[in-house]
Amino acid sequence: MTDRTQYETISGRTETEIEISRSRFLTRIERISDETAAREVIAEVRAEHPRARHHCTAFVIGPDGRVQRSSDDGEPSGTAGAPMLDALVSAGLSDVVAVVTRYFGGVLLGAGGLTRAYRASVAEAVLAATRVPRGLRYPTVVTSAYDVAAQIEAEARRRGFAVGEAAYSDRVAQEFLVSADEQAALTALAAELSAGSAELAVSEPRYIDLA
Image (cartoon, rainbow, N blue to C red; front, side):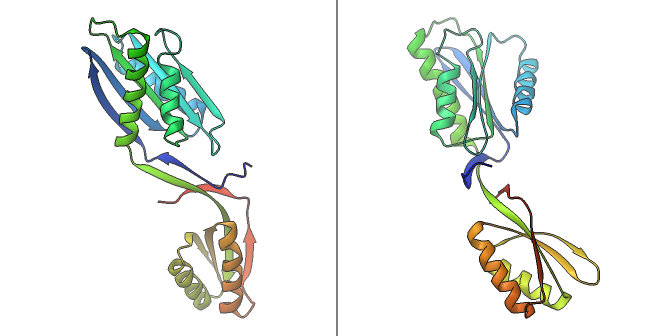
């Protein structure tokens, strides 16, 4: 597990279009979970625009952005995929794929013009997208009596802790999703409100959306 505790992605799909020297650049950026999902988005865009000359791509995956791929798809080497990838990385985003579909307008842009156009296309889509912070949280199930569980949940919400699912039997097993710092506070809170009778079970941490 990476030691990075927070990063940013986007909420879903964003599509934009710009025109430069009569060439149209249609951009889709979309949130994805892995490389397979990224390639599915790329294939979908290709199918939607079969007559386009180029479908250039870039994607970044993982909390630390370790997985990075790009493709010029027939444009001069280094003029499309790399600047698109740079736009994503510079924006601090991960778990995102970008596809720029170009319809040639008859005017040659040159290497510099293409590089600027592809980077600008992704940068504009990034600005239009809704950013979502993700954080590393520990699923912690607190099992306690019904009246105590209600008190613990109310105080946890007041402190801004993320509250998950609950299971009900003779007692309540309430899940909280807390950071490493919050975990100590939740443990103390549960012990105080239950007079030491609450039971806590902590699972492996996972990333969740924080907004």
